[in-house]
Image (cartoon, rainbow, N blue to C red; front, top):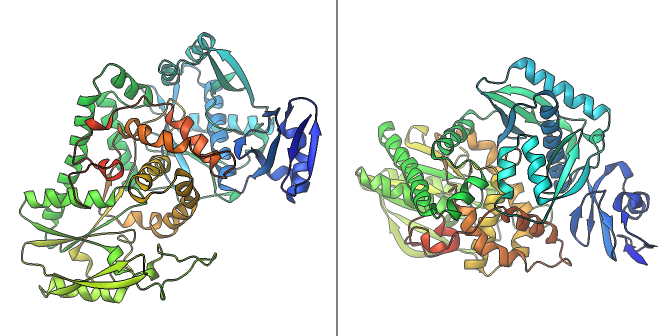
Length: 552
């Protein structure tokens, strides 16, 4: 007999493999939730579709639509629905997923002409029709050769190529209304739950807008970010020029051993961006402080060092300081709703002291630099002094750099704000993008292991709180930036894979973090490895893997 145990320790036994959705009434009752709110299940801490056949003893929990995991499943299924609708209406065209903008994904059609408003309206109507029909989303397992033929028939060029670098004996495809795609992660079991979405014209393509996380019935009204879009567009065009726009393109470079040249080109492109930033600062004139902000693991520290080098080239003497030095004592640090110290809120910083110090520095007066001891939770003055001379320029990095409440006493004319983030232009294939948050989480897992002795499970467990802080304190202010710089390196996931995979494999099914670790392992399986000895000593990637020529 097979035994399932629920959250309230009740259990049920059955004799043969049975889809998880057959147990929804018992699962809902044991978890005190509504059946209709369950979109997937955790089976021994692995997130599975409702159609998943359970044939072993397991602990089972519901995944709710209002959870982060449920929101991700909703988005993935919505993207799959769009791809199926596009295939139904325009089978001769390739639908290509782009990047995210707020709660939306940018798409284009791979054809000579831009998609029209009428075609967008057709797509939206077709999607709504398929939702009304509540069509079943199924999985089928094909042999390798059959899968290649199926993807060839569907004109999914990048998806077909991705299989040439993994070559599994069998391939699982999701299927809907005559359309199929690779199975990467759980989807909804039918289209009827996809009630909230919209398609709107944007750039040369359109935006697929999806609900807010935690509120599946409400769309975000603000998905426009022209500066962010321009950065993505530049890198997308650059990717096309050099011939690397997706994971199969990168894998081909690795297999044919041309990745060394690609690494050099990628690094040169990033250094050029920092050189352009330095030129903009010089051209602006009168800038006394450069504020660098970005989400966790975006490479803020190395970005400040690279920018400092470029400013030196044109005659400045940069002085780099960190906002971490201006934390108030732990006795004054605010706490979050769970009673934990909230180091990511603005109130955790000594704003009056920071502004007082900046004003003195800009008047060429000497200040005593503060420091912060995280072990003791106290401010410490080490005797370090700082004074800005005529050609000196201050670089201040930290998560609140774009928020004007950080420097209310400093005139905007002397501030230059830079937003940095790992905005990779690569896709996995035609319809599956690489989330910037995944890129940053993998960076963080590797860095936390290398320099802080943390396990992958520990990093994954605190990641939701980090993301919450970003949504509150960073993303709302990214539009204030004078310049946005992409810190992603299009080869980096192939290097990080070597470090991250052993760490992720140590997360056991008895830990809540197992689901995320399993997902990331499957994600990294799309990349062939690159040895780290080919990463330049001044690469931003060295901040995470070690061996940097910079001092931190």
